[in-house]
Image (tube, rainbow, N blue to C red; front, side, top):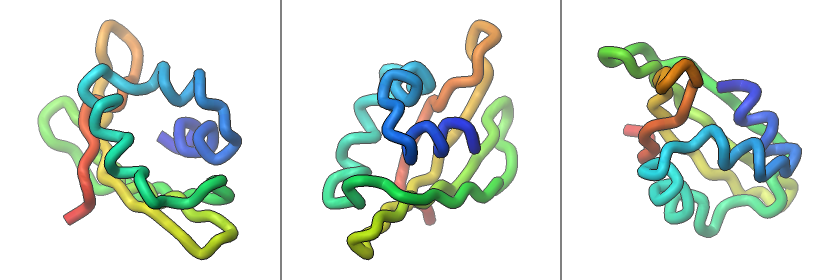
Length: 90
């Protein structure tokens, strides 16, 4: 998860997109709306496990004082770790 967050912070969009399932891809845009642009830093906090999913809270911040946080469910799909679901943290 940290590598994904670091890739997003570095603006490595192709790498970021490869980490998302189609469902997660649809969920990310509304969550990032109004967030920092560009992203300058991130924080990743492991929250636990739910079945086969590992759950993380990720916060992206920018120099503009804006930040956005999201909860991310990560699971192994066909031997590759993918972000399967995104939502606002509780």
